[in-house]
Length: 111
Image (cartoon, rainbow, N blue to C red):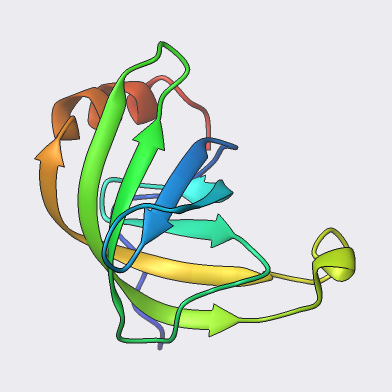
């Protein structure tokens, strides 16, 4: 039996910047929770990579967090919209800024 993920992921497109040394690539989320993100990108990092991520909330608040890539699926850029789950799943490990703001924002969204 598969254990259910906690907390619940909410489908939401948020702008993110990410990278290993500094957040140099721009992408968007497919879903998000305080524990993890699905980042839609044609250039995912390898599973196990540690990332620095900046999340831009709609009210211009910035969330800065470290995360670890749990899975990655690379597809050609022209097929990202057609592919199922193109990008990477990232487990959020350490918030530097904005954890409460992200929690508050996600609490306003429906599933």
